[in-house]
Structures are given as structure tokens and as C-alpha cells.
Length: 291
Image (cartoon, rainbow, N blue to C red; front, top):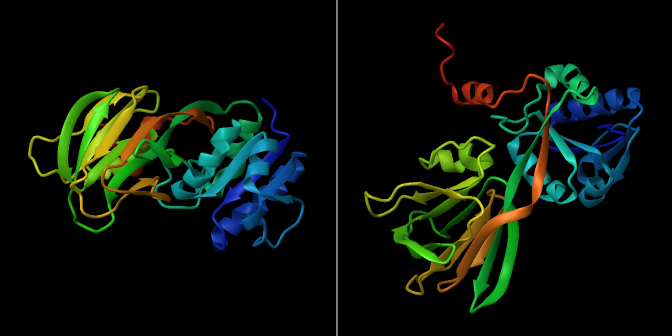
């Protein structure tokens, strides 16, 4: 696959990130690529040799999108770029870097492998969440990592039921529920005691948040299932549903929250030598081989 038009997007007003953007523009110019820079990023760049476009135009026209920043920047871009089936690669200017796996100090060598056709492609599925009130759709959005139903106040319990493909699973009093993809299993879900799911699994994990029962445990389910959360009318306060901790949807007592697999997929591309378990060892501080 040839990458003739390349889009740049990511962390803004950050010295190190701006250095990466400028170096990328020079690198891509040498390759003869047309360079598109997302508008809000372009406005802060003291450079030339690129076109400033909005993210939707970038997604429609780019063959490859390079995200500079941390996983949060990748998540924000991915929710839009997944709709356009553009290949995405990340240069890490954040903290952990589970999704932005290219080292900024050696990005040319790693991008060379991708432009030479030796990149490793993989697709990650997203989630769609919809909030219904009296049978009417109120709001909807998408998530790469997780959908979380939680209280609007800290340390407040709520009551809700969980249904899977219209089968009642359990009712619960807790601070909420995390529904995570394999991509998100190493994020908020992991902090809440959920399992790590390898990216190739077609599965979701449902992780209760501080449940008021010792028997409540995370459960892994088929990703093609429809998860329905029925919020008890007995709740006295408004609740919230968040997508990747970026987007918040309002939920009222008595509402229903529907979570299912999104038809769009995030097309990630990794440099040669990428290995998921190496990422886990590096980012989570696991031990190295003993022999």
C-alpha cells in the first residue's frame, strides 16, 4: 500500500510535539508526500509545506494519519478516523503509549519500515453507545477503549440491571459499570480490576465499579452481543455515560443504555518488530525473560 497523502494530528501547544511535527513535515516532503495538518494543530505550527484542513477532510483524503501525542490524542483522533478507514500510526509524546508506539527519537527508521511496505496492520473494533428515554433515542456516540456508566457525584451508588441480548444477567448497586474493548482492557478497565484481553479477541469485558457485594466479578462476553443497562427509576440523581473519558452523555433514572459493536474499525499500523506482549512488558513493568 502506498501512502501519497499523509495527515498529521495530535498534541498542540507542546514543545516536544511541535518539534516532532516540524521534523515529520520535512521527512514527508523528502518522500514527496502531500501533507495535511489538522487545523487546530496547524494554527500553532511555525512551519510550512503543508495544507491546513479539518479532521473530517483529513480522514477523507489521507492514505495514512500520523498521530503525535499520547493515547488520549490517539483516542480522540481514532473515533473520527475509524469512520474513514484510514491507516493510523502513533508517535508517542505522552506517558504510557499503548497505542502510540513509535519512539519520537527514532521515528524516521520506524516510519521507513512502514513506507517500505513492512508495517504490521491490525484492526481494532469500536463501540457505539445509545441512551434511550421512554423508547426515544436521546444521544449516541462511539468509544475505542470503553463506555462507562457512572454517577455524576463522587462515591455515590446507583442501581441498574445488565441485560445481554435481552437476557437478564444481574442487577447491581455500585458506583457504575465499565464496558471495555480489548483495546481498552489495559486502560480504565485494568485499573478497576478487569482482565487484559489480547487485541485479536472478539470480546468485551464488563467490570463493576466498587459493587456492594463480594460476589460481583468482571465477566468477559462475546463482542457481538448487545449490552443493555436498565437504570432503576429509584435512582434520585442524574447519571452519566462517558466514552473514552472524553465524551459525556446524560442519563436520567429510568433510562436505558444500549452498547454494541460499531461497524467502523480502527486500522492501526505498527512499525516492523512490533509485538503486543513486548508492549505489555514495557508499559506495565513486567519482568523480562529469565533464560
